[in-house]
Every structure is written in structure tokens, then in C-alpha cells.
Length: 239
Image (tube, helix red, strand yellow):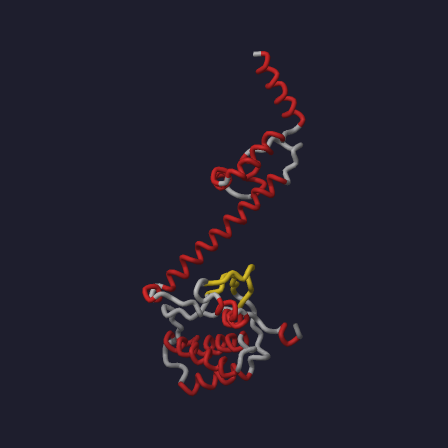
């Protein structure tokens, strides 16, 4: 990576461009791809429900258009101009007072592009699961694609959390010092910082995890607890 590349900041658009071939190759199967980790990005969003009061319109418009331009400085200038023009239309729709004329917007866009290489912009969001813009939708699904995206993302995130929790519980069990107190669910809860109900759910859901837990529980304990265990066993034999 050269010095110029290191100054670039990722955006959803830049990630799509970077992974274009992978996204295209999976247009029939993958609604989104997993980038493997959270990627810091600059993300901008203009809600139709927002309202910019007249006194703030000029400052907000200039600042956001400058940020968008700087975040996409590695893109061709025509592409950046199209992004800014689209963003300016959205800003105009939520701005009160008609504070900026058509020529005014054009001038702000021109200046934003001119200053994009010297405008500071920092990540304000992260992306791990990147939507596939080339995904081929069924006719009946296209209108509901936002809800489908949301449902799919929630399923992927929940599956990822399950894997993380499983690995965490397994690791804490395997690494447990058998000379410490006899393993129990409360000790495992404290070691993992998970809730007691979560521990119980995972031990019930995953037999292999429960087997590890029972082995550790059977073979762990302080010297005093081991003596007590032997005493109890002998007492049962006598009885």
C-alpha cells in the first residue's frame, strides 16, 4: 500500500468496488457477503423524516457534502459529482427556508470536489456484512428486499454470536485449573461473563459441551473438596 492509498477511507461504495468480482460471482446465491471482521467506514444517511432548520441548512449542507466527497476521493470525479448531486437533492428536501439556490448547491458541490483531497474525514460506522447489489431477486421479493436484508442480517449475526459464545464456554472449560474450586455453572458464568441462563441453555443445547463440563466438574476441586469427596464415597461404602 502506498502513502496515497493509506489516506483513503473505506465506504460501502469502496467495499463494493473492492469485492465486485466476488459479489458478482455470487449474485445468484448470496444476498450479502461476510467480510470476516468489522471494517471501519464512513457512512452517511439522510432521513426523509429529518428536518433541517433554516439557520443550520448552509453549515450542514457544506459540511456533509465535503465529508462525502472526501470519503470517496479515490473514485472518479464524475462518480463523486453524481453522489454529491444525489445527496444534495435529499438535503434540499428536508431543508427549511429555501436557503440555498440551485446555483448555490452546484457551487458547494464544486468546492467539495475541489477540496476532497485535503478535507479530513474519519470512520463513523463499521461494516462486516456487505449487501450484494448484484443479487438477482425473485419478482415477489424485490419490493420487500429491505425487510429480507434485515431478517437475513439478524440471522447471520445471531449465528455468529452463538459461535462466539460456544467457543468462549469451551475455552474456559478446557483452560480451567482443576485444582481450583469444583466447577459449577456459577463459576463458569463468572469466567465467561455470560448470564447463568445462557450457560444453562448452551449446556442443554450442545451435548458435547455438556460432556466437557461434566468431566471438568468431576475432576476439579480444592484439596479440601477432594478430601470431602473421598470421605463421602467411603461413607457411602460403609453404609
